[in-house]
Image 1 (tube, rainbow, N blue to C red):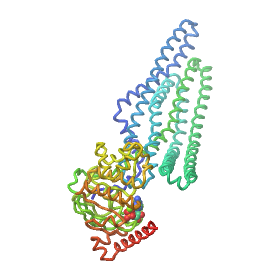
Image 2: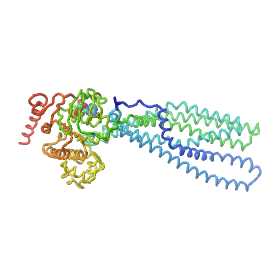
Image 3: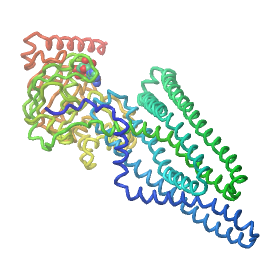
Image 4: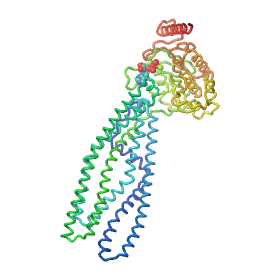
Length: 597
Ligand SMILES: Nc1ncnc2c1ncn2[C@@H]1O[C@H](COP(=O)(O)OP(=O)(O)O)[C@@H](O)[C@H]1O
Ligand SMILES: [Mg+2]
């Protein structure tokens, strides 16, 4: 049995996230190591100033060496020019390093997102999935950037300065060490809560993004119901939750920072008092004490930064967890078969339930369409007809039973091979921003212009396209808002014609059209059939005039096959098909009466 593509792996833990981070950094270990060296060097240069101070106070001033002071000044000038240059290099390289790592994560996450099974997009709002690629990756960037630019240098400073302090005066150094421990203690206490609130904030960003994306993606519907206010309030509610999450974290961060800061200040005071006493009683020099205090400043600054980095770290790790979950989500499963031998299509006992949906949309459905045959699928709305189309392109997989194409289970094909050979004209075609030409070419990106135009001609779309302001080059805007339903449908048919399909599925291609456009679409379909006479075809229809020429008619109801036969046989049976047919005729008569008046 093939693994089901529906189940997502369970949420991954922090260790998994760190493993992913390491996997991303490992290929650039040499770069990371040189960067660490550079950062360490810059940090080391930052530790020289107290030595200048000690030299001036303890040696030069007491000996009255005014001229040497100038020399020291010149030395310091050179020294700081070097420091500035190295600081600039370290900053730039850390930035470049971060950008490379992050851009790789972003691309990998987006590639993964595109390859998730359709069902995954119902278990999480798509806006939230997108936020994992965009805003979570950005939060991760902040963490890596502050880590790569400063953390290493600061850690080095802490260790180096502690060593110098112990060499200078071990009693004072012990006090300094106690300060570091107190600061680390308070940081540790807040680690867990900070992580939790960071997680909450990340998921609220996801919700906020999803709410906005859904409203803007359906802006036409929002406007036609005049529901801008409603949507605004929804966004406002999510925004409030996001702000509340941030404030909550701020409280924690604020308390943590205050306690860490307090430890540092009290420690400094203690060293000053104790150091003063040591100068008076134990012969510690004033220069030594000054250098010590300066070093202590050099210790506390970095320790504070390292502790505060914890904040960025927790936020970054919470974001990384969400990115990592996406990276480890199970993609669509596919087989290795790349060629479809023929267009024969058969369903064997197929049962399918939509993820999260209640009753099965298809129950034990079996039927066979021989290569090159045309079979019509009819039935009342909600019977499961469109579901059949979705299963054939493997947008979903059956829960039970199997679907064979060319004699092999759909799941044994490579997805690109399978979908390249199955053309669906969907009930509601979707167009992208771009020209008409590009929209038709979407079915076969490598198609030449002439090929695309020919497909449009066969789809009976050429005339209306040439009537557009820039003909084939006319931009048709997001979702083709400037085209009518019938025009969109003809673009969709042109797409299907362009594809070298073995199986063609027309899902109510004429459903929402008036009789005039229906005739036009019928002509378009005739063009399609003319070009691909040996294509296995499934015509889904509730308007029955379209199915008369089919080799066989299957009648679906409630996800089950209830009747099958030719038009004549089914009418003679006086079953569901006959009833639907009569309804359609009545509908036609009424329409004729209205139009006839
Ligand atoms: N994406 C979906 N998620 C959950 N249920 C769905 C989805 N699409 C369709 N359904 C349900 O599956 C059943 C069959 O739908 P469909 O195949 O679209 O019917 P038809 O095309 O025959 O009108 C219906 O009950 C419908 O509500
Ligand atoms: Mg349908």
